Image (cartoon, rainbow, N blue to C red; front, side, top):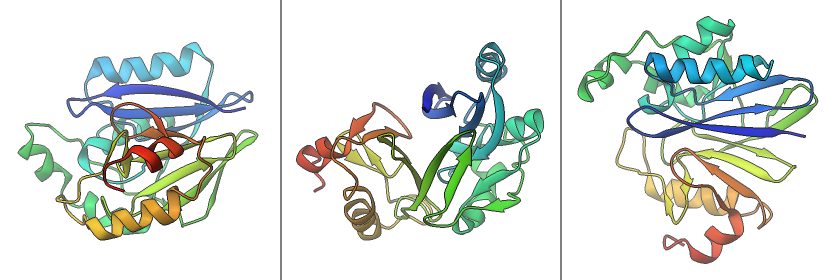
Length: 210
């Protein structure tokens, strides 16, 4: 059984997720820890629960979601994993950081790329990658048959991801939410990139964008 732990990191209030199971292997999705206190909070949780990080994954490559990539990659000797279409967004992270008053470490280039429908394995557990661009090229959601999906900034409680950022496309986003996410069971819990969790069924019935 997968246990999902959520941390809210950096000034953008990004949800960082650590997924683990009974084997104690874990994956870290969107490590957004920026300052020393946030990095300690993440590592303390891993150490206190005797977890072994085995994968570092980004739902997409906007700056707020990758601020902890360098730290986690170095600390746990992990290669970053993204969808290949997100690679251009990593090209000018220091410049993006300056726009927001952030000092950005060199973001390690990914050694592995995740493809649509790829199975992500860790411990005795698995997730299915779902390619969902529209908020950003390279956006991925990760679905577990245990009844949840991690969606990054594609879908929110009562809202959707912005499309006025680099590589955003409103029509593409709406289409992917309808055809890639809303086909999941209604009781699927949705873990978002920012803010509260929700469910697929609730968003189908109540989200004003649909």
